[in-house]
Length: 137
Length: 228
Image (cartoon, rainbow over all chains, first blue to last red; front, top):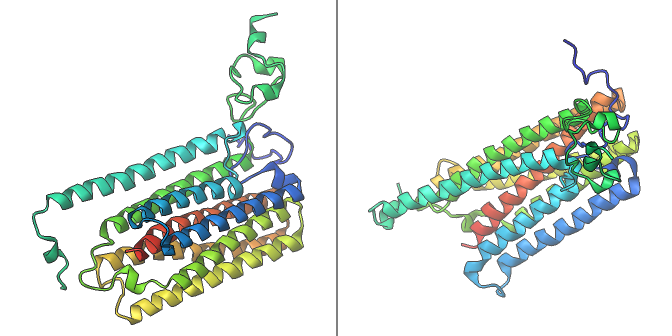
């Protein structure tokens, strides 16, 4: 058995409709577009990061809404990183990468959401007053 | 007009998802899309990149378990210090800036690699490494300061989960730095061979994913913890 892909040149335009994650045609073949993509990503990421740090300090936002605002900003920034740094897009040549990401996100949501739900539920059902839980050892 | 023509787009770009690509496309020479059921397996570059992407997603799932533990335990301070008492917002901001800029310089090194520029690839990889080292130095300083105050991982469930999730990310960055040094040496000695290019691609993916995990870290651990 020989590996069919072994002897193949990686750069003969074979993968016109299929692309590895983290690869963008722009960055591969056009320096200006490549720099542009990463710079846009950096600017957007800096704005969103700055917004996150600002939201914590500003009195403009209603206190209980701050965690929600932070999580929304974090998810937005993750999207920016995925698109501009990892080049995971909705392009047809990215279908496989996007589907894998979608499955990963599903598992992460199940783990986080399931844990918080179950542990929160157990906490509510525990009859101990919360003060005894906070006692120093 | 034959029945096959109905599935054949007039222009290939009008059918980007290649609906009906199984209908004898090879005979029509319309699409030879590899990895889509026609045109044979994808090239090694795509397969390696995809495989590493799957690994990174599993790594993200590993982190999600640490995050879940932290989210459950972060109020359980056992009478000890809470995040508000311990976290230094200035230090977190510097760490965030270092890691974000290192992600950018890492991307720039990928552009330089695309242009096959040995000099600029090395320059941007060095910049990435220095920013990563600065990040690790600040994190180590934070950890040492906390342990010196008696707020080590053994103090409370909150601190155990804190050191687990932030420390796990720190170990990933440290490993990434070792990988970075290895890649610089390999690019220097071996040049832009296909196998070296594939390793650079994987390293780039790894480094960008570390930054994505840091977004979750500074948001969930530091900023939300600070607000309380």
